[in-house]
Image (cartoon, rainbow over all chains, first blue to last red):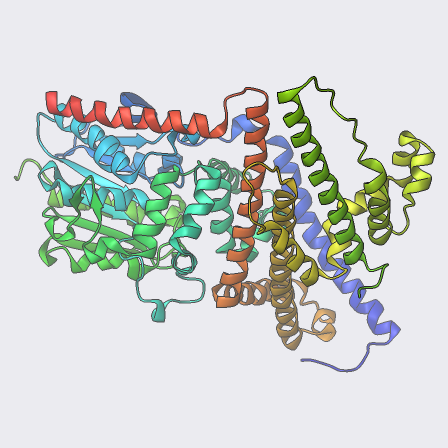
Length: 380
Length: 257
């Protein structure tokens, strides 16, 4: 309890001794971590190692098909994984035992992934229409051609999930299923029910005017990856501030845990710039004006109507998601017929959906089971 | 009547003197041009230093009292820079003049920045005043943001002090205290970040920083123009054209396919 007495010299010396002892204990942990770190080189920290081949490319965008890891073949359509432009798709394949891709491949599912490349100022005028109706559609067309003209299944993540949702709503005949993870649909959500720290990004964007958003992005040409990275870090302030001292020390030199930490660092450091025109649309049309759920979003001159989604939908959300509030992602349920719609709530954060060990059992298995159950090509 | 030693007054006088010299030079140029059209013309040598030096000296003395320009000039350029480098740099450091009377300075800068444009007069002082003004806006935004965050840390510490004291530390609860500190500070920072004050302060910081970045880009653009190099906006125009062409190509391919 609080004490107003000033400690005398003996008391101070005693407390100093105890504190010093504790610091020594923490110091030993830090030394162990330093020792482990000193053995690790850049080449030891690899991510996205599951073998894949580039099968299609357009401008900077590439479509890769993963090589099978097993001889068994699931009776499901090929799955296209679509990540957003704010990060890299490598998160789905962080390491061998924490890889959504490997889980799907081990179940015999045919998996493709789209890579948006590394946008520079030369890409600043690319719009969301270019990405969704252009590049993503090109990838889908290629896969459908390879699949004997039959529809494919789409798995969209975060912003990529919103892209996938828009394309499925615009071209429902191309898809046998839509699965989503940590995907914003309603960009307002239920602010009155937000827990502490939830929905910061929504409030942040809504506090800006259109002119302010445009000025920031136009000045840089693109939305700098460093800026979005700083915003994401600020969502977990103390964890971000202490990860290189306390965080590392508390790993106590555990090599596997340290390598896992470094793989995450590698993924975080690889944050591309978001093409300018598309970023302005993302913040203005989606975050500020919430046009997707209002039914007023137009892409390529066509209105995106969520009610046009006619395939089975799986929506995976994270209960402790700092970036995409649960109410913002679950809103999709209002627009899809109940018999087609299913949800999986994962007890973790935005990135934990893919990189935690627990997620491999819940998310990867849930997705694989759903694909086999709802899109079994033999029973259709 | 303003005090003769008032820094703002000195700056005003310096500015006025520069303006006068500038107008005189413009007048000389116009006279010369007119004469050149009618007769053989030899440009009249103009020395603007005498009329501007006193004002400049007064201005420098008012804003950087530790630096004596007359002595510095007398001892030579190299020595001047060597001996009075810090004083000279302080002249360009906004914090030197911001502390004097930022609001008064801002009002003056605004007046200069918003002065009407004349088609045939170069008015660099307008651009300079705008940059000064924007630098001050950025510094103000930085200070406001830092104050807000400082207050959040103070609140965190006050909250932490309620839960943990020296007695607790003496009993060996250092790790527990550290974890509690992380939790309390995290809570306080998240609460602060979700508040309207933080949102507004952060927005102001971002927009003022963006404006400075924009000036930097404009300066780079002017430099590139001067040296006949492709400018950022020219490359952006080309990029836009290429993007449009790619769109058309994709549409055509789809129509054909």
